[in-house]
Length: 227
Image (cartoon, rainbow, N blue to C red; front, side):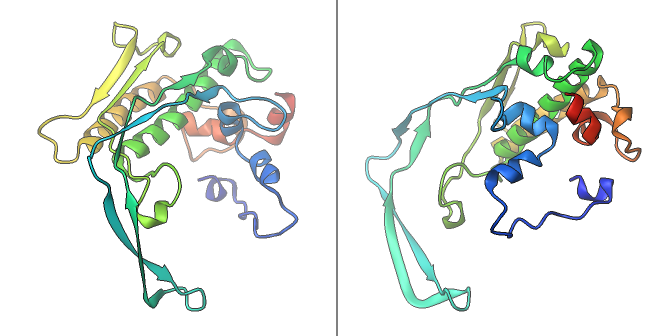
């Protein structure tokens, strides 16, 4: 997202001397604020959830093994596995807004704009999850990890100043939509545009061809050091 705007080249993460913590340290400050670093915890917490079976019997899925030499499918190397389809109880994600608002040595107005920008970034992830393009768990390349989102409910967002009068927001599938998650994502994105419109651009980032929440992705090295 940022390479073109900043005129930078992508880092070569194939270097064996570069570890995962080096990669995390190079993330934009908004990402570090949300997910944390090796120095401090992030503002996000994903609570444990449980699943329940939705079928009496498992279904069998057939796979074709890969040829390690050609990179294609190995001839005559079919194999199968039995899978239990699961329905999940609500996935609960807690966002510590006080921690998010107090991150860095910024003015109250700037801190609020940065917190709103972090929320927009998180909201885009939730929208992508709702569309079904973001698998959860392992073996996503085998067709697993598919998630169907029927509803997203958000509460405790009075600090955003865009609640619906009941202290939150709710986005749910519509019966007339063949792709329920698409409707959830579309409504969520419409609201995120409303949040984005309330954000004052971060002029200190020094980038002039982007506006709104994304200007807080490109805070300067000096700003990160001050924070």
